[in-house]
Image: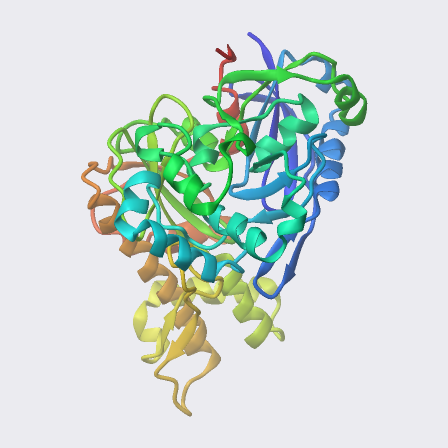
Length: 438
């Protein structure tokens, strides 16, 4: 059985692992990089991300040079423009960036909401669908883009550094706002023309398991790899996790952390305004996804604001206690759980408390946050069921530090069985068997 170097590039860190099949033989510590947040802008310096990739690989010692191939799973979208040498002309703009609301509205006005949804599977959500970011740069920094030779997402950028290839996969392409997602039909001429971009700037779309190229000599030296090692196109991190979870029609995969992602695998995609519908990246399958953008981060925001005098363990015990009591612990206070906006809204929603009185306490407010997250978590099931894909009762779950996943699923209607998975993204890469491109 072949050995794989897996690269899991998330929104704040990189993990490198050596796999044989889905068994992780060695895994690096997290190599962190920073996102620069300035108002609605959220960017990563390309150099710092590449340094994190190199650091993660180097921690594996010489084992990284012995692998049979390399596979990557990446956060998405993470938009970047490159010159003809592959050097980044822009920062890497992450899915948390919300600067392009005006551009999103203009795109939808030109294309039409229904038409855009039918072609791409999603509305042009600011930052979350990267055509809005591209439109922002065209409007505000056109001179920078005049030197662009290739524009894509993070796996495209990493391939230019590692192999020189100009590629992406269907899962990443789905988040560009330029790809015919529901047909897996390639770049859409009308969407490209509407944005005013040439399809020559876009990467070739290959299935995630295709060999896109081999490690270049300069990349071998920079990253501690063996020259010529085959590199697969790669996939979005959530897709890799779904592969490990089973990727059957009707399969649910729930990942809980700072955000909470609930994904449904389907062979019959039905786009909806409040869902992200995208290609799995392999096997002609699709995902319908609903995300709560701030979960653990919202709860720990409450600690920073209201409970700094409490030890962390006492605070954790408190929000678990309140979750068991239920809505009555909130004293009638209601919380809208949009502290980090919403990935399926063009004009971003914001978190808010309602029904505060002079009798409201910090306990009421913490309970309201917990109940608001539980309510929003449960409301996603009818949204996914409305796509027409029957929801299988066996749910794969991952993450869930402080047992937050169990809290969020408290009010799920129906009978469910939850199966914890560990290292799902990394182990999912072990299921990508290399196939020569073409």
